[in-house]
Length: 103
Image (cartoon, rainbow, N blue to C red; front, side, top):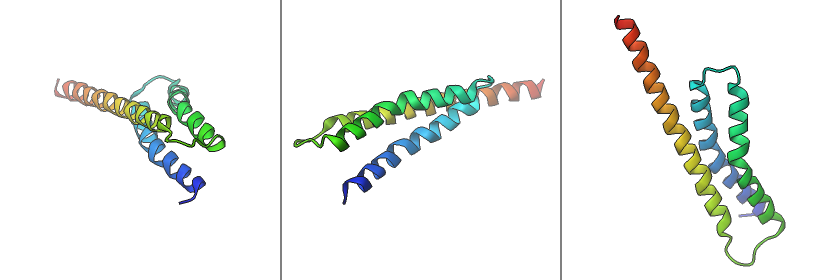
């Protein structure tokens, strides 16, 4: 597998779960700044991955590069936390709507 294709596959497999969890998280925000908050969260969480991929591409290590793996785990765990928070917030919203309709 060539190097640019490998980098593109890594970017997609890391960023797709992050984008899905950010969409879920932003759907629970009720402020008018929700798009700005979502974009800032995306940039903050994905910037270490971008740096590591650019650094690895231009300065190819002769040994194993573990930093890309750690950053991948960081992005996945951040996506998981955002997804869990979004699911909990959605559950509370559904619960409060059910309470209001039963009154």
